[in-house]
Image (cartoon, rainbow, N blue to C red; front, side, top):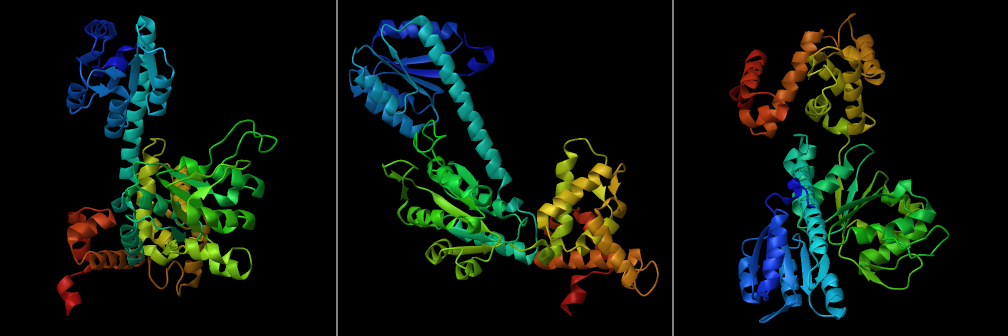
Length: 469
């Protein structure tokens, strides 16, 4: 029997020209807690589709329409609505054709009570899975919206502009940048800003797969293709059909696989390992690498023809040291993420700690900064992260700055308060200039309120009129 939760607000549209069968199904379904609307003709069924049902039950033989045709039309209109077909025919052809056409189950007449209950319960499970998937996709789309890409620096503004320009197209994209800069985030932003947003985003780390495994991972394999291939397996290209395939670290792809990759990118067809049939896919390919592919071509490690194929449109993701002005915003973002767990006491970062973070060169880029904040939160038992909570690599640079200063206890000839003021002044000016001196926008970029921004501008003597002179 269906659970109470699974039956809530589930409306069934049943196309059935036999009144007795309609009454029987409605009685059984109503007893289980479902709401059923019975329509006797195809015309009425199509009209009733305007009020989207949660579940469809469809007789394959109606007086004025083909049930298979109605199945196709309902699936085209509402691909997420489960359909169960019913038939009085002894032929197996109609149920098989219906299942191939997208029906999730079929019932034979006279409809068995228990068989109907089980089929409806299974359909509701599928319905809830579809609803969960839709919600997840909506949340992912919101998460990877361009507006949520952190950083108001000119370099990141340029990256967002490039994403907006190329996301609507199906062009192959090459994302370049050092390890840890966020190349996958850019790839996801491209996908969730495109028309393929409702389709899968599938990622493959080419550097993590051996030469013997990568082809099976990408193209799939047939049963018996090799010793451990005990069943047919769909590869990443098939899994990403209709959506986006992200090939991370494509510069580490073996040369033997590169030749097959070139053919797939040109023809959008391939064969599974051990297979003979050609499989056609509609996939948008996004590649990423931390290597210089032009140098790899010269060294013979990357095919020139594949390089020109993936080099159609390039997005360079800047290293964190090239956008130091984004460090405070990123640090606060990672602080907020870690705070959600409720495990840590820290809720803010001191100005002195922010100065130290901004001075660090971040060879591991954004990933290293995230790890630094998480580490600081683990050892910080106060509400505010201090310099002493930062990783040794950051502290070494801070101590190095101190030793190079003219006076003991000074930072480049300044005391700590002066250094913090100078840093705040440069950050505020950069934000104001980026936002064309719009205080509200600049405050949002800096992660403070407009009132706090105005207060700090007052204290630091920052005034637009002075800078316009």
